[in-house]
Image 1 (tube, rainbow, N blue to C red):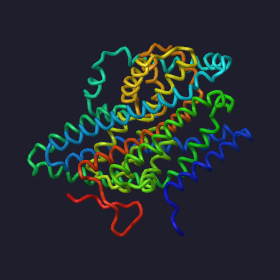
Image 2: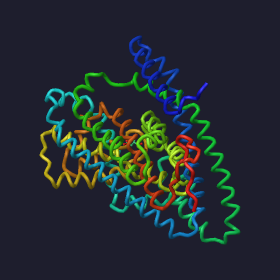
Image 3: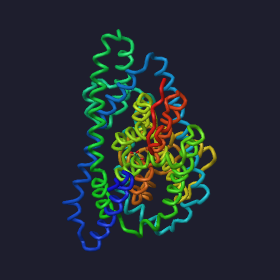
Image 4: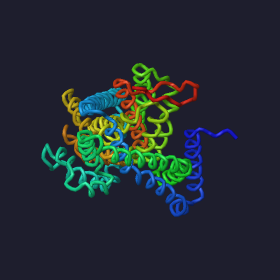
Length: 436
Ligand code: ASP
């Protein structure tokens, strides 16, 4: 029997999961889903997260170890960061254009607004408190936070990926600088471990359709009532429209223009990672799969993907920044607060920075939104307005975050002559790595 492509398997898993969720809601089977189905979704996410840190360590070290000199590393680093900042600014701008065009905040009824503010006030205050503890720090604190004081502690925290990346780049630079004879065994060991981890990802992905099924079924059971979705329809529409423009227009077109990748091969390559991002709401949990897809199915040399993607998963969040821009303006509109042009520029700046600071986990974008709101004087309590629909929008923005990272890795690879060419035997989705 012909094997069904992975993205179809995952899509079927999602569909069946949603169906099971709906049936469970109808027959009051919510507890059954929570007790017997949801744990498998949690196990699947744990498995993905479990290999995220080891994967970053060995693949980054493997990639840096292959570089001949440090100037190459700094060239790649500068390009990566600059392109990441550009795509984020573009995303925020797209968000601002959609929200200003449709004015979703003006469409919300006063009664609904007051209900939402009342009902979600306590949920919102939890997020606000979390954000405040970050806001009280000095301007250079993020820089201090990148440098770990104990690498083993940093490695035990999935939230400290930037610290791990810092240490590995530091270690890798030393590896390039020492006598190649001494470096050889370290590199050989890292190469071997890298292969083992890639195999682990293959094995975990066998369970992806089932993991996704479990995640979707439990999400449907836990979703708030449809009435709330209706009240926030226009707001959700603006976020989704902006995200869709990024996913279906911006990234594939840029990839086509710059790397020659067709629309179809772009989506054939990246779609399993996109579906997983959607189901898990976490770019960090999706990272192993993004790495595998980009390297093995989109022709990006491992030297580039192992550097660009882990950094992207932590600092490049185009979807999150777009959502923050739409949400901030929506809340201002709903609360009748006028935003000047300067305020909107301020939103571009703070949403870009806030998305860099957001962790790659579910709901992180909303915590950092508090900082965007504060920068233009919108009351943080307004967060309560958008709380109810945050989860589905989080799922969608994570897809953009992951697609953005993958697209930038293709662009950086192409600019360094590290993007493969289509397989000579015409194997679909397979690329031959570039030869030096
Ligand atoms: N869930 C997003 C991610 O992991 C972050 C966010 O916007 O909340 O990329």
